[in-house]
Length: 369
Length: 229
Image (cartoon, rainbow over all chains, first blue to last red; front, side, top):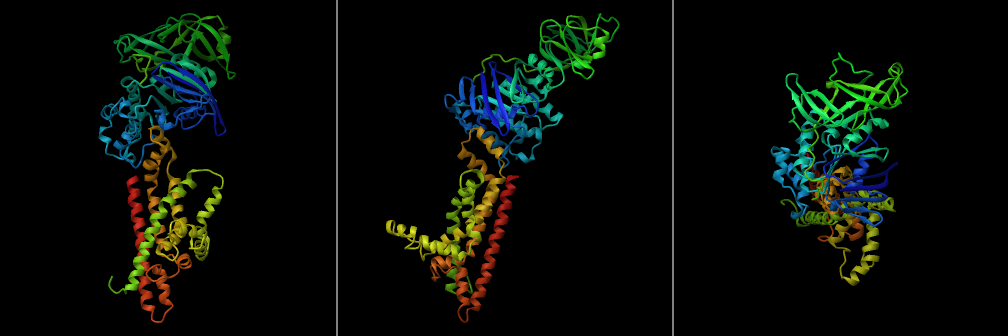
């Protein structure tokens, strides 16, 4: 369990953030640049002192202004992986890896050098210097170095932001495995929704130094778009119900009903996350018969928000689970005489649905050391 | 060394001894003050910075005189040292080392401070999160990364010491075999008839030693820098 309730300043920037995560697994700290994510991470790591508040990791306070607790960063056992890797240039990869491990009493270590080297595939790099590594290799070594200190909590501050798409795709599976193989709670800072959807279980939404929402990724991610923090979209958790090999399609069971998406190489029963952008959703008053769109969901209009630019955001109740958002023109609202309470059909093209496979839920929600 | 009279040889040896002692003794202080100036904010930092750099701009004879007043056997600190511990550096070769240490100190502190400034503070933060104590971070991250500057600073101070004249002659005088370092011996030879030969030889030796020190500094700094790549 991680409990953060801090206020303080970094330069002219004020932060006043509060959230509690009771589940283990990966918690995404999500928000636009300048929303205070890195400041918050530095406060949790002990590199920045909040003016007041409380930070508790697995029941042990590392900071508590009222009780006068402020544990020095090197005694917190909170690992941090930085955007730029921050490998020590004068040490070999091996010396970088064991730097934290050698400073951790053997009784507190929960992972060994061989296991980490194996998991991250960095065995061939051990004798090299950081300057000779590629960006992706550096970041893998940085992850290994932080892990080998056997932290009670792992902070990842946009570890993929400095990498190109190919390198990102190279690292993401390691972060997923990290969670599966080593049960350490992770706080993952990002402003990229696709990364969050791929790896996070819980999401903390930040804006202007404050926490706007906390909860399961599906719930909070859908809110992230409507709060003016990005494009409106809907994130839905679904399970693989079956495949239609003759058409190269996969049938998914979502709380709101069945959906068809292009083939997913996933076993029946496995969980996926779907991301449906509001601009990819169309509305019809009656169920269209002869149309190429495979996903037609009966829905009730809950509300209509006028963007003032000729488009509106329609919030749709599609049954249990999160609301579906549709971005349509104000003209269409007028022509179809749409309003709250109206019954419509939402049309979603199969190919417009993005699929993410989140890390499987951890076996136990209690992921202490 | 062939061609050198015992007096000339003694001056060369004495100079090296003085330079080594002054560099060795001032290095820890140089590191401390460079770190203080590079990494700490405190009241009177500007004043401390000024004091450290003063020997660079003051006439050396003023520094020598100040040392005489402070550390001479009747000086403010010197008298106390002599009365309680029975030691004195006045008119001793150790006094010459003190004079050179003070004169070379600004050069040493400057070089080390510059290299400390160049160390990426984010690496130090990373080391803290890996469990290294602040002292451990300094020893394993900061110091190794600043090593080229530390080496340069030490060699600059060493070379500066080999050339020290004004503060030395004012503080510990010009005693053959005790405080007559190479520059002082050279000066003495120019003051007596027939001293041109020895003076020239000592001048050549001075040039060779100074060049050797600068070259060594270059080679060492480059080797250390290569290790950091």
